[in-house]
Length: 303
Image (cartoon, rainbow, N blue to C red; front, side, top):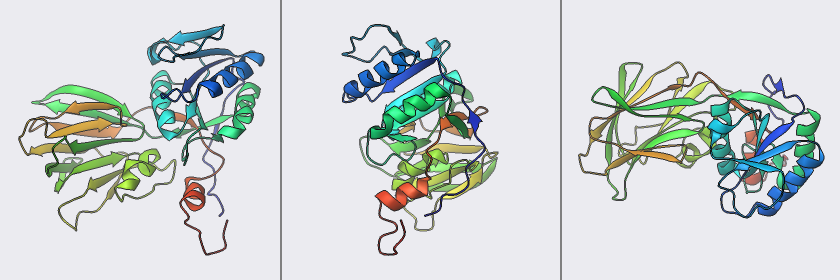
C-alpha cells in the first residue's frame, strides 16, 4: 500500500531535556529505566511524572503536572495510543512536541515500535525528529448561561448514559442551525486523530491525519437514518441535553479521562481549539496500520 504524501513537518532541534511519560499500569518500568539510561548517556536531562512508582535512578526529576514543565524540549510516551493520548494532554497544554513509542498492540499514533525504542531516542538526541500539527477541540459545558466545565480534547468528546442504560435525547446544532435531535445511547464528536478511537468502534469514518474537520457520530441511534456527519473545523457544534431528566442519566467525557455529569438543559459547545497538538507522526499511515493489523488487504496480494 502506498502511503499518502506527508504533511508539512517542523524540525525539532536536538533535545536536551525530555519528559518520559510511561503507561500507568507499571508494566513499562523496565522500558522506562532503559530509556532514562539511554537519554542520560546522550547528555539529556530526564523528568517523569510524580505519579511514577518504583523508580530509584539518580538524576531524574519529577513534576506533578504539565504546568510545572520548564525547559522540556520533548514529551515521550511509552505505551500504546492511550498512553500517548494522556501524554499529549500534558504536551499540548505546555506547547511541547510529543513522541510515542508503542508498547501496546495497534499503535495508530505512535511513531516507533517498542523494539525500535533505541532508534527513537537517538533520533531525539540527534535532532532528527519533526512534528506535525493535529487539530484539537475546545469543549465547554454551559448551564443556565454560565460555563461550568472547560476542557481541551486531542481525540474526542462524547455524551453517554450513566450506569443505567437508557436512550438520551441530544438536540444538536451546527453554527446555530438545528441539525438533528438524536435519540441514542450517546453522541461522539472526534478530531481526525480521534477518528480511529471510539468513533471507529461506533461505526464512524476514519479521517486522514491533518484533515481539518470534526466528526459527529451517534452511538446506537434509535433511527436507521441517523448517520455520522463531518463538518468543517470552523463549525460551532452545540449539543443540548434534552432528556431524560433522571439524575445521573448522562455524562460528558473528554479524551476518556475527564467526565462531568450533565443536567437537563445543559449545552455542550465544541469548537476547534486555537493551538494544535504538536505530534511526531509515524512514518507509516493510519491506513497501513488498518491494512496490516486489521486485515484489510487479505486476499488481494497487497502488502
